[in-house]
Length: 131
Image 1 (tube, helix red, strand yellow):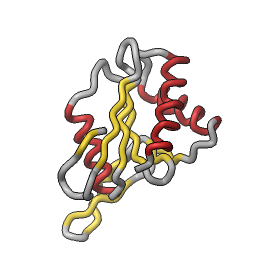
Image 2: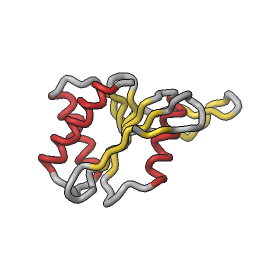
Image 3: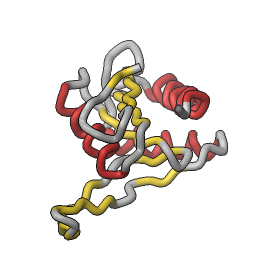
Image 4: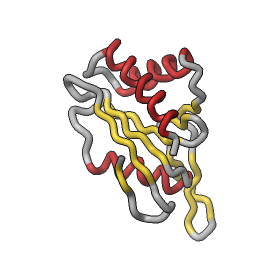
């Protein structure tokens, strides 16, 4: 599922990390990655609001993932020293609400190398596997 597209996304993220290093604000990485995606002709949407529902009623609170890439991948960016379980939970929730089965968690704040995880929601129900 979206493996080739995922390779392209991570390639763009590595380029940003190689150019900027670690330790900058998340917004700097977000804008830089958007430029890199544009340069590579990778389609994306930035900061699109997602409507959540309770008993088929829309909630006022909106989720706002960092990126949607290739119309099928949810991307959440971080600039922290290490990824934590709550970061995966955040991406997992975005995936459940959008019903997208592929998500990437990309951390530009890790010293020495880009940190990333690919999450797969196998059946669009609770239960997640990592690849």
